[in-house]
Amino acid sequence: MDRWGDRFDQWARIIPARIEQGDNMITVGAVAAEFGRDLEAAFTRIAAILDDARARGAHLVVLPEAALGGYLTTLDDSPAPTGAEPPTADPAPDGSGRVEAAPGDDAAEDSLPPALALDGPQLRRLARLAGDLVVVVGLCEDGGGARYNTAVAVNGDGLLGVHRKVHQPLGEGASYRAGDSFTAFDTPLGRIGMLICYDKAFPEAARALAVDGAQIVACVSAWPASRTFRAPDLADDRWTRRFDLFDQARALENQVLWVSSNQAGSFGSLRFVASAKVVDAGGEVLATTGTTAGVAYATVDLPRMLASARASMFHLRDRRPDAYPDTALPSGTSPLDPFHSILGPGAPAGGTRARKVRCA
Image (cartoon, rainbow, N blue to C red):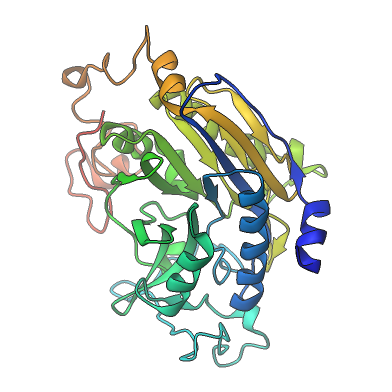
């Protein structure tokens, strides 16, 4: 192992867990690590993480949101101008990861993340590093001129799945265009669905993946601590608690294996809560990094775990869609929506990105 890999082994907090021994055991790793604008540094760190995971017999590794190129340096409440397109940026033509700062910026950290093509050299490089592993990673996608906050799943054969972040917090819409769907996909390990950060705050998102047959949900995040009244100890911060609650609730609601990664450390004005974890289909945390950087590994018999969780109370089977047909009404059409009093009952939700999806 190279020098950085030796340091990573000391730096990482590894908490292994084993349940339900059987013939279909898979080991999954949820990563909490710090990633910035430098793509070369990111690939060096990813290579060391994957080498370590491979040595531990892992099959799936979930890296954070924006692990390739870093996240935004700040989140504010300023919306994008009406009709404005999210800005675009191209990676260096040689694939080196060098990012040209925007005019007036003093450092690359202040610029937007490099926008990467899904058929470009960076994704091919990631696939080579993945080899026999399934690897999920977040990046800024160059989507034909528009930027998307995207998660991809790859192995040595190439691209397995793509998800564009649908739910955008605060001012994120000024930098990225929103996605509009949740779709699971087949892998050698089973059927996987992906979410990005704020997506997991919406029960419909994870439910849509479960209805589409997802057995594993990989949720990648760049989830920061509170911006106001932040707790001195990250473990006590209200945003850390929300992050953890969402992970357990979504796993339990949908009775899936939940693998949750997050950025660690700080970037710009944001301090991330880490707290990468693996949650079983009963909502129990099998492994966690806590609020420190590291990798949480768990080994499970996936078919047996799912069968056990769903043996008596199978939530997907016991749904009553006829009793809640309008669970995805557009913003402004519910009397409980704060916009309802402004728009009026039944008013069209102009400009909303909401889309009615029958996934209850």
